[in-house]
Image (cartoon, rainbow, N blue to C red; front, side, top):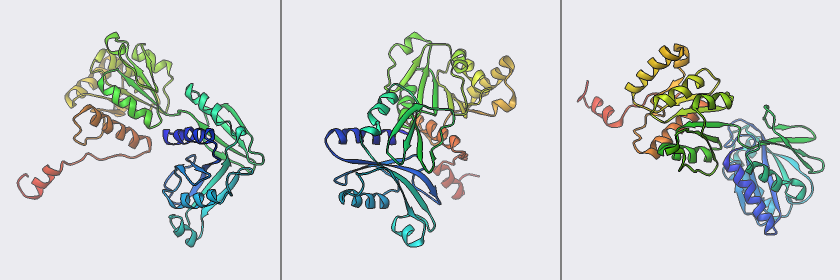
Length: 334
């Protein structure tokens, strides 16, 4: 669950507390091109006010009409589909043959959203099982398998941070990365044993660890849902984290520093820690997309953009500066 959907749940509890009837919609399946993936949520208030999205506008408009007509907020959950034929696909902004399937769930005390939010605030990952025939909900500890599942009788969703972002060093760059990473739905963990840096670090939603970086990577059991980024510029700390991260299943491993420093780092990791060439090829350094970023927040954006691309299996090619390319095309540079 990302922060967009978490905010939808929070908004629902506020609306219910104010006396409104609300319906929670969850995308369960999509076919063809869809604006948002399965698990995404939308909330519709009885007066038509909406939070979140499932299609970018067209389906939401239909849900608003239904809410104002009083046909959504009563009874038990229902499964509805939008799209399928060309006329409906065109009406709801879907490609021909596209389909979005939703479970619409009237929000009542049995929905247990307050309890779910309390568990999420404690950092728990939660498996939520909705019984379609009755609307009853059970909350259970999440499992390693966290895919959404819709059967004839239940809808199972998983909530809480599943992707982790481990940042080595609590300096200025980390402040921006931690804030942005939290907004992207990562469980952000910051490791810095240095008292002068860790003492003043405080980012809401981020956990600060004072252990040594190599111990931290091992203790966290870094897996394929974890990104590790070394940010201290201190080889005594960064190299310790990298030697463990590069031999782990982390989906992304990066380190800040110039190309010259990266070359020296690779030599150290290979000669002193036994990191292989294949493992070193996994290291993103200099870290981040090359987009001309200069300030700490700009660099943080470039780093998380690269992490996002790697997470979804995309490779962004090395960019060409517009001014330099223009000079080549004008014949000024060969």
